[in-house]
Length: 252
Image (tube, rainbow, N blue to C red; front, side, top):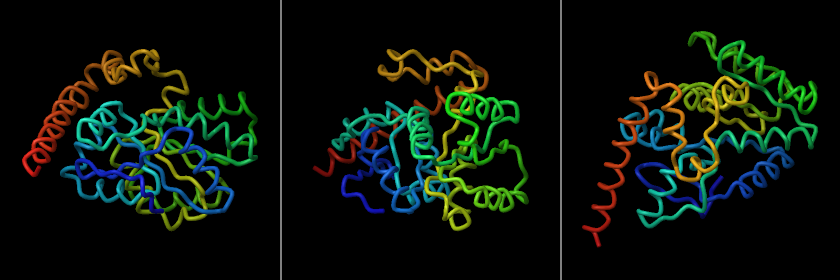
């Protein structure tokens, strides 16, 4: 799907779509029976994409690429290619699950620990109804099981697939098995969203989200596990943005 509003910064393609526009586009494609491969990018993923060419290809080939991180939105403005707004993956997933319920569509939940994905199934079944769930599976598997899992999802009759597995595994899985999953209207990576929905981790207050400090809130909850991703990753991202801006100014 080509989108004239796409921008490109730091080897990363991003669609300049609002949350409302993204939801409307997904609904339109489901109604016409087309498939959308959705992905979100944040500062850490953009940094990884500079050297991980497989991840870069998996992301840039997607139908819709939203900016999840507020830092990416700020960077787009600093680099003269302003994005409309941040489209957080967890908020988009919430809107899509509600859309699925209203349109009698089904969802498949793939990822996280067994108790976590079961908790998400239970919560959505309670909020909406059990019929919304086409199937689910935890995110622990060997490479030899990948194709079988993709086939299981394809055979479930789901319209939407949400994959809560770490990067770059989820991006590469969805790209690699896109043909098997061709009849699933929406395939989307959602990172750690299942943990939040299940109540295992807490979401940052709205003011921190708007201030671009959601990463810090997450870091404060799990400093030993998250310090490298956020403190080192964010520093590298800032360096890349400044380097890109410098090149633009030199060319001018």
